[in-house]
Each structure stands twice: as C-alpha cells, then as structure tokens.
Length: 486
Image (tube, rainbow, N blue to C red):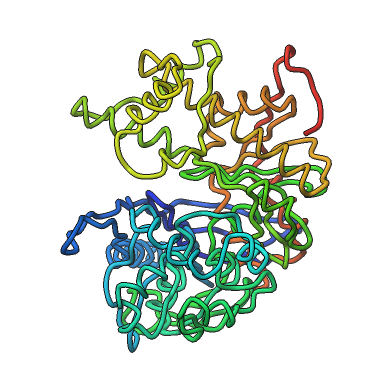
C-alpha cells in the first residue's frame, strides 16, 4: 500500500481554494483518490487609480496570504504531506526586478487590452501570429498586455515576468520558472514550447524576461524556511499550471470520441489532439492550440462561460442589498420555455465587469429583439445562449479536428448546473456527462501523485481513476431532439 497526501493550490478568476488529497493505492491494489477542500477564499479584482483612470488589478500578495494560511492549517491536519502544486488562470503575470514584485499585476479584464492589440498589430498581424503561436485571438493575451507595459515604460524597470502560478511557486521556493502549459497561452512561445525570440525582438521585448520553461511532472524545489508554517522543505511540484490544462487532464473521457467543456468563469470548449493543428481552418473557426499534460494539445475555443450568470447575480444582489438566491432562479428558469432568441455569448460587450443584465438587454434592443422581461427570463436566456455557444463550439471542434464526437463531458462549476447540462444535450442531440466539479484540483493532485510515485500510468489510466472515484452524471437529450453525432 502506498498512499500519500498532496496539496493543490487552485486559483480561479473569482475565487481560490487549497485542497488536501489522499492519492495512491490501497492494500487491495485499488486506486485511492480522495479530496477535501481545506479552505476557500475570494479573488476579487481591485480598482486602483493610476493617475489617469481606475485600472483593474489582482491582489496577488493577498492571494498568497490566503494560500499560506491555508497550507499552514492543512499541515497541522496532514500526517504525510508529500507535495504542493499551483494552478491558476492564464495570461496574467507579475513583473519583478531583482526578485521583488514591482506592483500589483493588471487583471486581464482591464480596459488597457484594446490598446495592446493596436500596438502589436502595428508590427505583426493576426494571421502571422496564429502561424507562430497557434492561438485564438483574445485581446487580453499576455503579449498584448506586455506591449502596453513596454509603451508605458514599465518594462524598463523589470527583469522578469512570472505568470501567476509561477509567481506563487517563486514565493514558495525562491526558484523562477515558466511552466509549459501556461507559457503556451502567452502568445510568445511557439507550439513546440520554445520561446519565439524573433517575435520578442519585433515587439521590443527582451526574451530573457521569461524564465526557462519547465514541464508538468517536474519538481520545482522545496518550500523555503519561514515562508509557510509547517511546510518547510515540502516539495513544490509542477503540474499543468494553467487551470484548464489540469482540468482537461482530469476529464474522464476517451479523447478519440469526446469533446469537453471546462465550465467556470470561462467556458473552454474543445477536444484533445496529439499535435497542434495550425492551419487556416483552425484560425477561421476561432480555435486555439494550448499545451496540455503529457505532450497533448488542447484544441479549444473560449466562450464567455458562467461569468454571464455570476455577473448578473452580482448586479441583482447590489440592487437588492442582499444576496440573490441563484438556485431559486435556476429552478424557476427551468419552468420557462426554451428561449426562442438567444444572444451571442461571445460578444465582446460582455467581457468587462459591470451591469450584465443591462448589457444583455441592450444587445437585444440594438437588434430590434424582445428583451427578457424578468430576472427569471434573463437567466433562462443566459443558459440557452451558453448552451448554443457551447454546442456550436463542439461542432466546430469536431469539424476542425476530424474527431467523431459522440459524447460531451462537462467539468467544473457548470457540471452542477443541471439546466445547462440538459440544454447542451438538447442542442447537440448527444449525451452529456457532468463531473467532476473539482476537475482542476483533481488533475493537479493526480500529476503530483504520479510525480512522487504514489500512482502510475499514462493519462488514460489517470482518467480511469477519476471515473471510478467521481462517476459522472449522465444527461440524455430529450426525445424530441433525438441522438446524433457532432
């Protein structure tokens, strides 16, 4: 019997958690995978005046404080903590000089992104960028943010950029590195994981700004003395530090017949391929090639995700002066007929923070369409619009990749939303398998467990372990929609 304990630091765009997991095999040779969320904490962006406007930032030192306290508490309850690893959202970074953080990182939803696009496209166009990095155009990608920092003279002060999980890892170990799956989202590395020095030069960026690339399954270092109580000398391992990379590693799927939807603040919809697909058809469909665990490629499209719902609920709660009951709204929305007119969930108007219900209403009015008349109808419109966007992306993923998609797996917070899962099944005429909810943390701990010899096997073996430990909930399309392939 070999069972050990590992800790996953899982930082999402709106919240974070520290998870303790038991990983290994029992006396009967059966895989063991047990998770406990030790602590949850918010991740609310800050508006700070920068001399000309209120810019949006992430309070990463506060997040590290939550992480440190969570790990310290966890260490008091753990009898055999073998390893710690970090995953987070992509593209954002901290700038350092001589190892010191120069300021709070900008949040990717900050309005400066549009300026970065203009700066970069004065040097290199989108078609060439895609040929170099294989990425879907997203205005907040790291290279656009860095272009603004360069234009503002901020990079004159910096000698290092660390992506968010790499920054947390540096504060734990004192070791600077750039993890591969997250590096692949920056736009500055080729699809083979090597830095594109020619692109760095053309954009006026120092290629030395990023540390050397390190692969999932490595050990970064060990927790330094005095950093986290009770965790001194515990190994800090490297996993798929882009949270979607960890989530996809934990999808209990057959990649030859399945598509996935990692549904949280964002909806990441796609398939897993053995190699990047960098051709015009992929670019035209708006798909991205991001690095996955074990050399796989995540061919996916970004959809706005549950952000539409959470921002609406946040606005209604502000209006009411108390928290709005989302489960109650969803239950009522389930009794509404399907929305005959869905809105475009990918429209950039829904990207910033703000009054989401008002923006949804404006989208309908500008097109001469009937606006949802109540909160319940708005929730139903959001669910049906997301399902339509997800279904469209699944079909596109199948067409671009050539994969015969026969089932769809939904993981993350969206797996708990039965109305959404049923709507996706109906839109596609395919069965939807929902769960696990904590896929990101599960992928994180499984790669740690394998790194330290607690569990073995390839990605398929790890996914079998997930399916056994967390059997998914099946949603079949309603009879009127029938069954078909994507």
